[in-house]
Length: 310
Image (cartoon, rainbow, N blue to C red; front, side, top):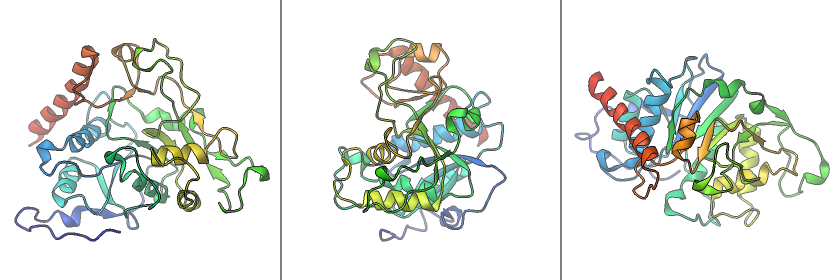
């Protein structure tokens, strides 16, 4: 774990005690959870676009009448030690359960983008064993419809390891006996896709996956991630999960229904009832102006709700 800095008490009073440690997060009555990873961007709150994204998710999952959970499913925001207490307090005060997790680094990995330097911290989600299933979303996901039913979909059932010994490598150790990795791929035609979109065969996109937490799966992920060159490290967690859950292995990933999420979306997806899109509301180069306005509308709905609540 990285060395903790000491915040200015005049700037961040009382925020420290609001953060939960991953090892002390208490059990809830919910079998399920929503989760995301937040790593700090710009220093100032108003300039941190990913903080705004995470606040939007908090609003949409917990407060927006059109999309909020109807089953009291908590929204957990994983944060590494480097995230300021001021930003933790902001998220906690708006309803998220903020959980500090240790930094997870593997020295051999070379992420393709600076923004992905901390994505392996996502592996800590497997430690949340008080939940049977977790929907892990990237913070730059915008929701249009309630997501609760995804946990009951046949595509997100917990599965049994196929047990083929020829798919077990001696340096990887024992495989978990049960697992869950359910998600979706990008459309073959990219942003020019039609509806319904023809999806790529692979890879499963790590920005929207349902998984089953267990200590065995956490340890297995860490063991595989520690083996230099076992998978490409350009998109670290996505390539790790596509290796572990490869279609011809013992724990193949499962495709969710087309209507849950679209990566590289179009306004037509929204018109046809897509539940969520993996797209940045702040993207400047957004050719689809109708979609851009729909995404930004969600941002200002969140801001309006917060203003009315204060």
